[in-house]
Length: 367
Ligand code: SF4
Image (cartoon, rainbow, N blue to C red):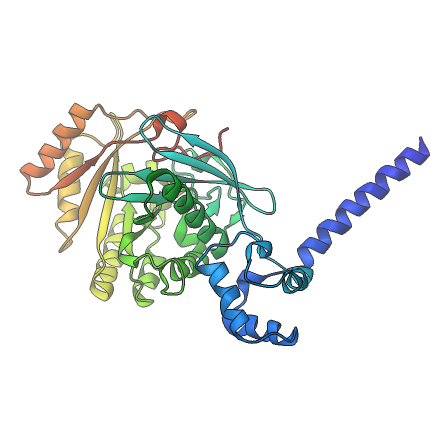
């Protein structure tokens, strides 16, 4: 008995020690090109090897050092002694009857996140996550029911794009055309990683996807929207609006209590003035909550404060444990017609991937 106890303890210790050893390795993807050059020069390698490593990481989306096939085996082994890529891996793939693909990814420290591939005739969009879980508790959202575990690193966000692009090429013979940060988490609460990931995704020596084809969706944090403007980002911004009256919006999205519509309007106007980048409002229609004539009028009044704004009316998908119901398509059309009557054009977005819980608001790591 004592012996087996000791054996178990020894085994546990070995597991712990090996985990510690893995964690001791540096993330090669957190090094700049110059730092990689320096590492390789110390190994007696020529500097062009650093460019090769860089290309494997940010252009070819290598998942491990072993993938870097134009480096000698000896060099790869030497790099592996001190470095790792800590890539995320594909855990489960679910395919919807309407062509949407949901991928559950596993991080190197065993968390799960989700990304979605949404093919259409004129575009293929990847919807990616920015955090493991979310801290914002929007009352209609499946992710909001989870705890926020941690922010994703910029390379983990990048990995989702690489993996979804791979599926797009295999399945449709086409690369991704658009990326939306509408998966799990609030992107603006993981500011530096989201910005770094977008830099790598759009860089000429990265995945070369134009920032104009990238949309970051936020629940609305005024101070950080102003920071985006000051940083002169080049991507598009979407505000998850869902109600153009503070009382209703605060019930749907508690973050509205500290970031009310007046402060959001000011920060979005500032964003527009500084960047000229397109802004859109996402408005999920909930039956009996934000679908009245007065709600439509409030939305029109808010939109008229902006020079140029696009409104997407989004079909809601039932989430287990959440008390909201979506509107029928007929009623959505009627709501859109009211907006149009006041001179505001809105696009109705039908939900896709709902049979695999991949639609808007449904991402929650369900198997
Ligand atoms: S809607 Fe977005 S910000 Fe709100 S809880 Fe869900 S993931 Fe978080």
